[in-house]
Length: 167
Image 1 (cartoon, rainbow, N blue to C red):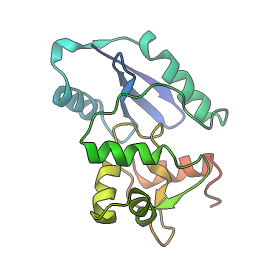
Image 2 (image 1 turned 90 degrees about the vertical axis):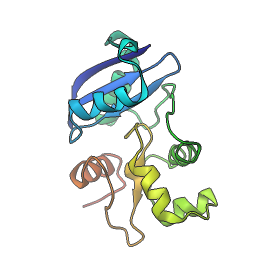
Image 3 (image 1 turned 180 degrees about the vertical axis):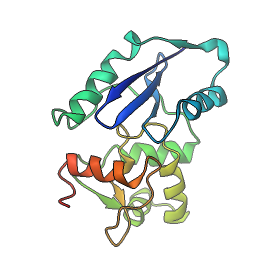
Image 4 (image 1 turned 90 degrees about the horizontal axis):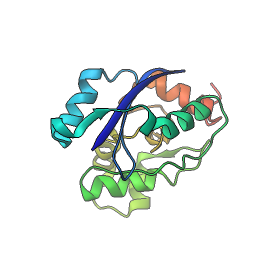
């Protein structure tokens, strides 16, 4: 079963889905309800998806604490849904410390991939768990805020929240 819900956060309405294994999808503002349920329909049968806020209470609590500057590391279980390469990239993203940033080039180097930083960037862009899997901590080689599916303003907000950006 897939348990989904939504809640209002400091950055707007967030949709969440989780399985028995853990949280599998978060849609932050700029991604619509239609986008969220489109992703669910691509990955699950309709009869598996149910509305259930209580199953997502822990992740909602952790996200709220994060937005209030009271949480630096998420501890909720994760159910990664992607290709083996994507999952490898996403696992590496979870190793970027709170308040830190790295470039796409550095991320590709950490992964030891011959696929190049563009491929790493595409895997980053398809991250179904923004914020928890901190793709916002990856920036351009020149330090610019590039490539965030939820928009540069949201990326800037998250990096400022973490103290990684002093703009």
